[in-house]
Figure 1 (cartoon, one colour):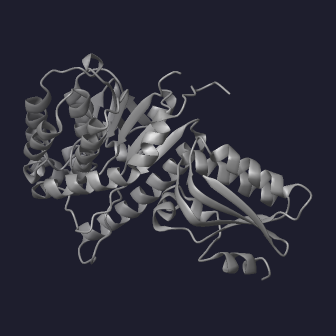
Figure 2 (figure 1 turned 135 degrees about the vertical axis):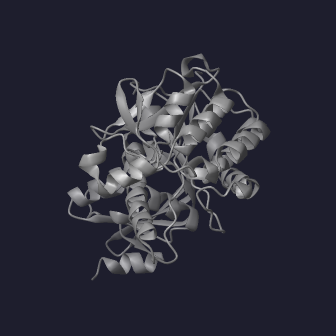
Figure 3 (figure 1 turned 90 degrees about the horizontal axis):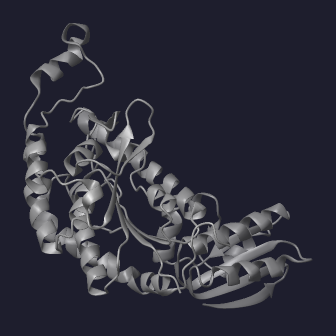
Amino acid sequence: MTKRKVALVIGAGSVKCAAAIGLARVLARERVDIDLIVGCSAGSIFAALMAMGRTSDEVAAIAARLWTRELTSTRDTRAMLSIVLPKLLGFGEHFGMRSDRRVRAALADAFGDTRIEALPTRLLITATDFRTGEQAVLERGRVVDAIRASIAIPFVFTPAEVDGRLCIDGFLSDPLPVGPAVRDGADVIIAMGFESNYQERIDTPGRFAFQLSSIVTNNLLRSRYAFHSVAHHGEVIAIVPEFRERIGLFDTARIPYIIEEGERASEAMLPHLMRMIDSPATHAGEA
Amino acid sequence: MELSVSQHGDVCVVGVRGSVDGSTAMQLQDTVAAQLTGSAARMVVDCAELEYTSSAGLRALLAGVKECRRQGGDLRLAAVSGGVRRVLDLSGFTGILRIYPDVDAAVSSYAS
């Protein structure tokens, strides 16, 4: 009996992606071998750390240091002025209101010059091609460059050039990138996704914009997941933690709670997951 | 997974107990298909005891829905639990399927 190929997909979700640590703990305890990890946006950080073989505790500690509000604290004044003086200040596709100096330093601290293709577990990081709208699947090159592309939040960070493509945040093409795992022939795909919060009140242009973004992102997540569910030959298992408390984008103080919720959601799926992993394998292309 | 089949007037009710995944999805699909032979394609899947469905289960459900509708009928769901509902929500199935709180409501829906 051929072993089933198992993939783990960690979708976009800012600090909520730390729930994947809870999932990783459950999978490690059950000795589930993961053949492929796919990460998108903040999920790419956790995906890369896991693919490197970091323990759950190491991942939690690195994530708490890396994903902080300070990442976006340095304004790019010239860029912001270019909004009102586009021709004079040369507004273009490389627009971003925040300097990425801190985020690049934080990523370098965590990943150094590690290359994707050299990792112990196969890793794919997804971004979005800013010029074509297509999903960009990054499977080689420096981890820091791939993550920087995947987390290139529009308006916040400038798009990033990787592999000859100008990339923005991966969530814009698919917040839960199951597709690359399907294409890679994974039999069982464990997909941890996160729904975007809706605003409790809308009293600023920022909240108005965030509300629209959440509407689009959540609908995109559902529609892409629906397609992948029916197109896949095997099993896609969605784990979408439900957070009883509201989690802010950079609420790293809540990481222990987030991990706990990730663990809880994973335990609920565990009997079904183990049954699917233990079933006889079928491979893509076989009847 | 265990399946039960019962007739409520001209509506066939298939009860599903347990989980639908890759190892059991074909059984569900075949059972639904078998009920369609020579009958009006009005079906209800009773999900009161359905604990979980994977994507394989969704594909089996979709195949049943499409065949029922191709034959001029429908496949409707009854008594969907929270966890299963969440999977259906996430995969967009709640947008293409009619779901009712219980079997009686689902069966009655064919009369209106």
